[in-house]
Amino acid sequence: MPTIYLIRHGDNDYVKTGRLAGHLPGVHLNENGRQQALDLAEALSRQLPNERVKAIYSSPLERAMETADPIARAFNLEIIPRPGLIEIDYGEWQNKSLKGLSRTKVWKRVQAAPSLFAFPGGDSFSEAQNRIVNEIKDLTSRHDEKEAVLCVSHGDPIKLAVAYFIGLPMDLFQRLMVAPASINGLFIDQGVSRLLTLNNELSISAPLHSQDSGAK
Image (cartoon, rainbow, N blue to C red):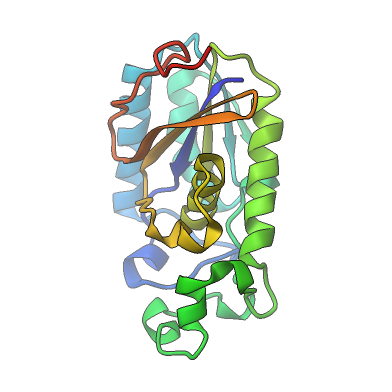
């Protein structure tokens, strides 16, 4: 299995104003987000050998594809859209502010017991976790251990994926931090997962090769 880097998309006005974009169309990177995408491309191309990076996959939503674009150009690869990397469908909560939602009666359940929560008219956290975990398993099965795979996705799905692969209960996944334009690395092989880097902004400090991570 390869090393997989889960990259959160760059900044946009929904992140900036604390609103849930979910699956809403037309949510683009803002000026800061576009610069973050360029910086990511530079950092990744500098630290990952071109011959190791075999594929760049992305959520089909605009903000993710726009983040993936300069990275793909840096590695001379095509972006492969993958619906399994998409953001959680927040249903009726889309376009609402986190500040306002934090005052609702169910907010404590979202934070303390997400495994029991489903967004009205949208996904449950369990559905979202199953979707991205199955996607990652499928993608990693397509590559060998000496390769690196880049996947551009969204904050909550990335946190849910990391939680699953490191054995963290879903009800604790909110304790993880995944900032916009951060790099999160996992090595997954024969049922064993290792977290190489979490919420790493423009630096991959963890070992890049499976033998370096202790995997055999």
